[in-house]
Image 1: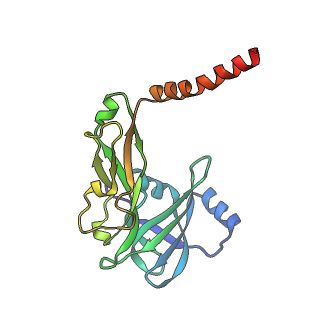
Image 2: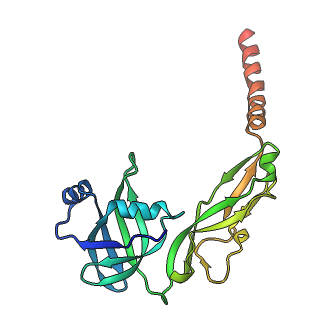
Image 3: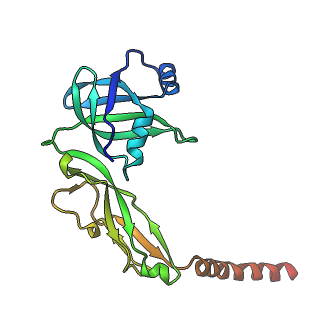
Length: 209
């Protein structure tokens, strides 16, 4: 399915009350900025934008919009604001991009496979859900995959294990943990209870005296 090209109409009236009216009318307030041009306040069809997000794994994506007064513009969806309770779309930041200009973006990390440690009764902790990188717009991917199948209890995988190509420049420490496997929670709880048991017994004896 091809994405619907968004039509971005300039907003004459700004402010929170006008933004609420725009959303009530099915329009999503947005701003287009970057490429050393003045930021432009616009609005796009909220349903169309939501459908585009629905067909992509990540909100960090590049799309073409038809910007009033400029024509077709390539933009990176830089930030999407959602309502904290309803998750409805509130506002979106769109950054102009050029094919030969490097962009900074957060790319999602997806865990692939079932960790050996999980099969043994442990639990996996997905520590880092996205990683910050620099790349050219044409090299942007929706997600990086990392295979956790061989991960045993007590082991972890770091950013280095993503095995990124030279097209991507990491903006985080390469030893940052992406995922780890811990032991069964029940055993940890029993050990904690055992550690607390002795002081309680001593207290009871002291009170009995």
